[in-house]
Amino acid sequence: MEVTEEQQWRQVEEQVERLLNGQGSEVSGCDLGLEQSKPAALRKTVTYIVCGVIFNEKEEVLMVQEAKQDCYKQWYLPAGRVEVGESLEEALRREVKEEAGFDCEPITLLLIQEQGPQWIRFIFLARVTGGSLKTLSAADQESLQASWWDRQSVLPLRGRDILRLIDCGLKYRQDPWHPVTLPLDLSCRHVVQRLVLVFTGAEQQVWVLLIKAPVLHLPTAAAVKTHAVTWAANMVVQEAMPSTYYDHDVNTVGVFSLQHNGRQHGKTDGVCFNTLVALVPDHVQRNEDGEKVEVAGTGRPPPVENPRYVWHEVQKQTLREKLLEKTKNMSILPIHSLY
Image (cartoon, rainbow, N blue to C red; front, side, top):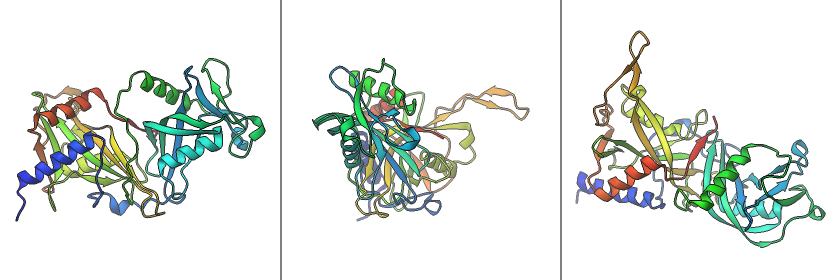
């Protein structure tokens, strides 16, 4: 029995709702960029870093003193590279144990930072569940010692980038602004971005960009080594509507969920980022003399020029409201490009 377009859209709606609830789905194919992307293989084509932000009851943050020669005796958050065969959470637990002496449990991802698919850092908020603070007597190549830092006393830091991460952790503890988000155990071969790409109209309408064949589905694009991971969304918009691409901002709002397995080296080392992307008209453009001119929007999504794609207007009120809320309030796990 042939599945109608309406039934296909209903299945897509259900998938979008699952993603909104922090769930995932298998990556069955990739629609764009695969020929420019190599399969993810730790230590070869990708490096994943995990970093733990852990507080005690006094809101002091757990810090470790570096043993590495290039940053000897400087202080940093417990962090390190994911090793072959590890999940992201396993890597976090191992790094915190080796560097700080504590057993820990991840609470949520706070932030993802990336410099393209070859370097991605996953920052977790975590809690201590056992073990004891590492002292100088246990110094080794992993770290010299660990300590709780009140963030006021002088401490020689390896990098000031962690101050933002610590602030992020404090803010989340006081007022969680996105749902608890932890990696889902679903395999993926490449680093890809699955897009819930929306356009919102003046009357609170929401459209979602879909690919038609083999059935209606959300676009999935591979990350290209020379660009930010989230550039995958730009590739989709460029392919779907090339004439109006430069008249819009392609804004990856954040990550609903991410999928990673990592158990089969070179086969499941990839990550799928299930992302909310907003296509926003740029109302200030330039005329042929280079002067800025204000352009009135139509309130409707730009026309699709590539027959491979189609806009679908969301009719279901609850889904529309959820997408509008996420788009406006940024109440979603952030992914930041360090490019």
